[in-house]
Length: 433
Image (cartoon, rainbow, N blue to C red; front, side, top):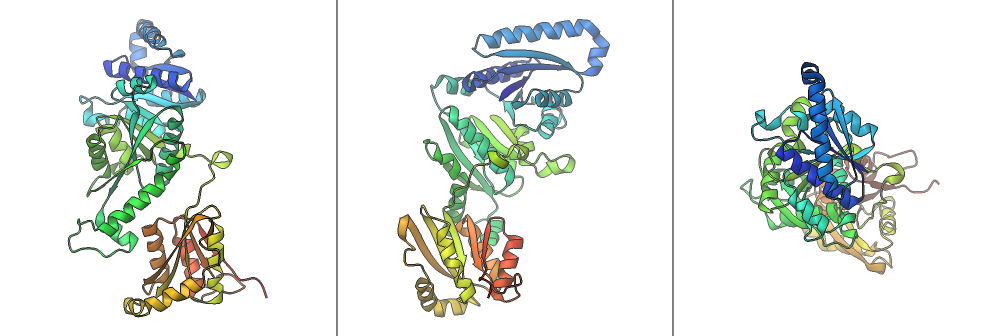
């Protein structure tokens, strides 16, 4: 993974180059130091400007080589963001490092080189504010403290996987930062909402913590300490709250995923505003770098939700749900009553019937079994909200009929769940005949 560092020879650019050199040394990767002369300036000042830039570039290379990095350099001409993106792709760079926009930049750099790079690069962009944390990390004097912006999205997964790769090279202390709007989360998880929209009940807090812990769990498989969870309610632009949370935690680096939105799409882009506003260094990881094909890791399943209406076809799904967790985990076995009153009146009987459907070895191999009676007339919506609240990895349902998903209760529910779920769904059909 070649590292490319863009420089314009300012003090901020020197700090960024120092951090890039330290990272290159730590990762044992080559470093390309690049300066781009804007086309109009190159035409106006000609060879004199080229010679001056080339001399400054060579001086900076010599400084970085003293840090122990293997440095090459390149002087380019053209529009900086376009040339850097082209050169990064040509050299197979895995990371581009640059300084952030200064406070003197119009609108904190909106439309500037850093802003354009963030939407053009197919690889992560590291905007460095301070080099000292990276120097200390390389020397092993202290861990690198990183906040990972968490949500349930593909860009988040790309950012998480990039951070997981960084953890291979040294101690990284991770803070999982999650900004949420309580009203929206109550709706999403099907929880009762208190009168005040911004109040956070213990049930919501537990559900969100469980979800965040599940989302960052892949980071905890490398012998490093678990991530610290930091959740905060917020209304308005998520980036403002996330940057404030990162400052409160005094992290060295904020890592966010990016859809690389353009034009008006940037108005709600977390990565766009984080790159502009954060006082600490920021890495923006485009969704494009997500591991695909043979490079994609095999996910580990730890929680499954299986639903039944007590029909034979629906009950068949229950053993399959347990088969998904041969190495332990939690299986939530649920049924949905038509209305809350029925759920309360018949809960004991319904729970007993659920227990009678459990396989004999349900709790073997470290598996945990939880049964629950849910209520609501829209069964699919109730189950989808339960899946969100419980942060399950897979939904498992049975269906009726031989010719597809027949419009009976569980068949209709299975079809709707497959259409709306944002996680894997296992549909169990009865055999032919």
